[in-house]
Image 1 (cartoon, rainbow, N blue to C red):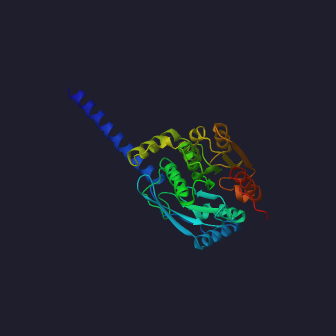
Image 2 (cartoon, one colour):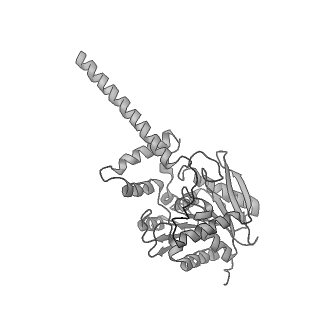
Image 3 (cartoon, rainbow, N blue to C red):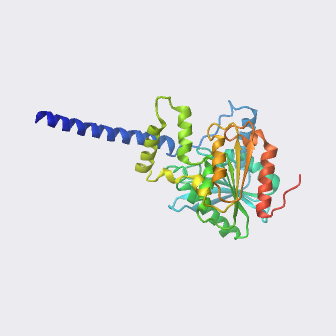
Length: 320
């Protein structure tokens, strides 16, 4: 009897230890992946010439005259964006930045392009970033509905005839695509994806493989991510799936991707392209790593975007 009792106690103790370890591990991963942090700017002292000039431009964009726009998200938090008007009759580009970045840095190339083309621009602060509220990022699960809220704001502000385009870089691009099957207003004429991921879990897997020791299987980390987002964040990470969304959309999509991207491999761009059920276009930038497409090919990058916007909005391309 004593032996059986000891076995039962041992099993119960092991079970409790496993549960506690799982909770602690999932909490740690959730904090690292999702919990709000100070939005950091790159260090200008260690930046190369290109990054240094980009940061100077980003600071200037932040100071330039603009309109601060605040809307309510579906869960009641305040989301903030900055609107730069160039021509009331021109298309509106709504830009979504990458994870733990901000619209001024991630959106610096987009700002230049929209200024060159005479388009209007809204630089959005994603939830749990910069001026927007939110205690944590849901890595696309709720953010995709934030995209729809911004599109609805554009309709209320400018009317249904205004041509609106979503554009994003990295996670922001993925989130914009995730919103494509949510019944967006007809005014959303297209989505421009710059180095987006197929899904959040695949993004996590790819980056885990490059950062974790070989003896730690990515499936173990996936378990902590899935448990952490479910237990501590109360959301299901598997719902952040850009591939699935674009397979159910009728909104035209332009995919721009670097063939040297190590964070979102080029294979992801091809999978997004092949999954997409709407009109689609793929532009590959040779020699570009993650979020380097404009840096490596500024002329081609701007031209392909200008052609896409012109084709789907009827906007006249600016001559210069």
